Image (cartoon, rainbow, N blue to C red; front, side, top):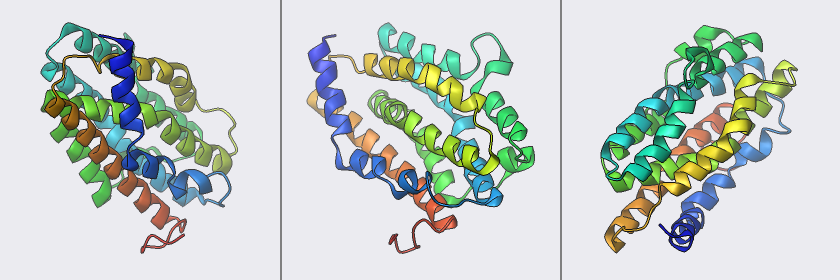
Length: 231
């Protein structure tokens, strides 16, 4: 693997229109200033639970379809951290549920809300894209390079509405996410054919479109954007 090849693939991924549209989403702008109710933030948390809960399964499925030990090792490192390494109490979903309960949100709302159609479609894509090497690579990279943006936005909503300045779930992402991005980038190894390279890009773009739809729905539910898409 060469730095030049990996850099080229990752640069093209983050340079896509799908990525730019997602990163510039109105949700990420307004969450820092719009007044949010306890119910609104509860909606955010209840929907976020679904991709969070499925993510370890997604990673495990990806590891099974990656053909080389270098990529398997890189993604296994991410999976290990997601599930707490050697302690279930350190698993991200456990920290999430516990920290949000401490911030004043009902655990049943956080982990037991019904998924929106957009949320269910997002999780379904995670399952679908983890069945093939190239689509799995695209899904992993698309998630990891934008995860801290998403987590920070949800964390900011919790901070502003609850008044709690620190949140263990946000803190662990700030600590671990740079390593996750490195490992996801390391998995973008050389040796892909042009067709496979295109498949990685296509999968990442689909993933970002699903995440855009996810945040569209959250923004609509809280009045950040109108159902037509107008702010």
